[in-house]
Image 1 (cartoon, rainbow, N blue to C red):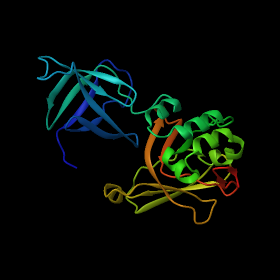
Image 2: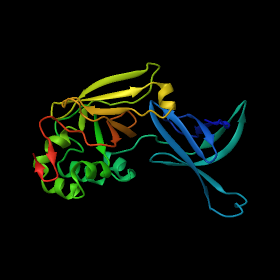
Image 3: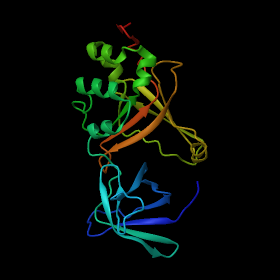
Length: 256
């Protein structure tokens, strides 16, 4: 990764703790890691003009917040400081907000919402939702997957519940070659998550998830991770396949 100048963002007048976060400025995009969850922020200049306005306003774009830069590029040794007017959030405020930011996951969103599994009843502890992409559903159940699942939710309830696991499924890399962890899902089956080492992650190896309930189940990549709440209440993991529970091997026409 090419390293540009290290920039520290400070919030003037903010009372929140642990919000002075260091990021790397790479061109006009800022990336970094906070509390174990990968996140990214960008820079927007307003008003946009060519050539740039004499005194443009600069905004830092967080996950679900925007901060105005009050003082930019203040020298601080080998780094510099940008003073902003509000706390930048690396978390989302709700599961609905997460899904609104995900492109190509409407099938799972509508199914979970209709089945009332976005916030499962009687689940008071943190939980994780594995979200297959729309493309994954089409690959598994055919072009009519979305319509069929919504029209036959009772038949697909076990499959949907198999995509919601108790606890935080975290995918932070470690020094170990691989870390394998099993999680219990709402339908009382297990999924296995494998997280690669730092070196393997840097080489492009993604964490994976597979259904432990079905021997020889396909292994799917975890494409993106989203966090709801500053102390995670929900983790959303976008995956490139549909996890199949042992008790429910569906086809596009319903339960087999």
